[in-house]
Image (cartoon, rainbow, N blue to C red):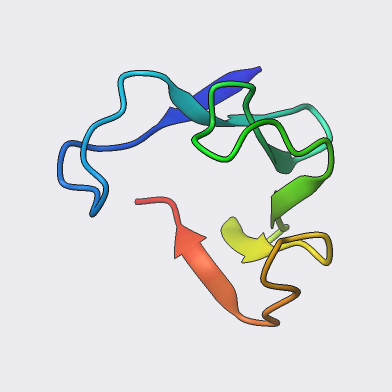
Length: 71
């Protein structure tokens, strides 16, 4: 499992602990150390096009368009 950390340039600043974790199902879940706590359901999902989309279970709802991409 890979973990995602805030960058120093994140609007909330560097956190030092993982905010998210990428699980084998290709979905991104809030880590226990996320500022809002563990969510239990995925916030994001990585799709076949390699971009990151909000999952239906995201707190703000499904977006339809990619929110993030790998570079």
